[in-house]
Image 1 (spheres, rainbow, N blue to C red):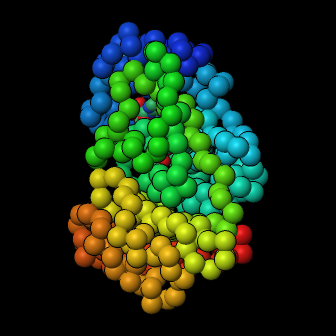
Image 2: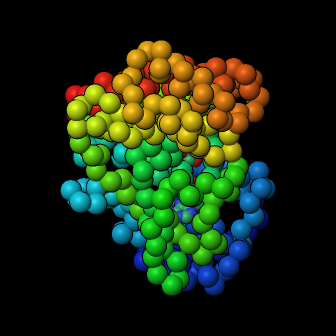
Length: 291
Ligand SMILES: Cc1cc2nc3c(=O)[nH]c(=O)nc-3n(C[C@H](O)[C@H](O)[C@H](O)COP(=O)(O)OP(=O)(O)OC[C@H]3O[C@@H](n4cnc5c(N)ncnc54)[C@H](O)[C@@H]3O)c2cc1C
């Protein structure tokens, strides 16, 4: 590793000012689970590392009935997994976090780093998009809120500018009669990154039967998570049956762009997506009916 300056701001404003000062030559360092590997491999050679761990405002998980659940960027996978508040409001997220990597990575890795790395083989982004989550982003001029869907641009590429810091994830409360399911499939071992991950969310009409709004999000089967909009359109206005869920799976499997790699061939991953969408749709529908 090459030498670098090591900076420890204690406020978001200070961190943004440092990013501006070192524009293009500094990297935010959160848990380091992703960054350390790339630096050791020589793929990143920043002249400065800005460790944000001493910024208290980036920590904590809170809930407000209007805004929903707010998760600070420095909250680790393990903290989400074990949070009683997250389990009460979005149990699907706790379940998914329990399957992320291994306990060491979950203790190190932060949710901000997970999203900001733009790494395609991740779990939380798929769920956040299904939940219509938002990101709070700070820059030297102030702060903004963007849909999480807009963050992902390409492999390891996000829409974050060089002087921007992701500060919080905000998940709005689920509307009444809503249900969500996330299923990830890992082909080789339990600690492997996922081969595919699917989140399906439904909100039902007042009759409690037909689907008012559907979200089908496919993760790890392309450069970025994607919404399977044809599958969403097929399901909207219907009542889920096993056949319909299977048809949505077939449509969704054509709406992603998996590549063949050690986790499976393109064809295999498409088949997995079809099965996961079917299963997730049936569970999400059952949950929406009993919400
Ligand atoms: C062996 C292994 C297995 C894994 N398995 C999974 C898995 O199964 N599922 C899954 O979802 N993920 C998995 N991951 C990914 C892991 O979750 C992420 O690497 C981790 O969460 C990154 O967080 P971090 O805090 O360590 O980020 P860092 O390594 O500190 O930073 C990552 C990147 O994000 C930037 N960054 C960090 N925080 C911010 C911020 N607040 N604002 C702006 N930019 C920021 C950094 O500059 C850097 O470019 C795995 C990783 C490893 C190493």
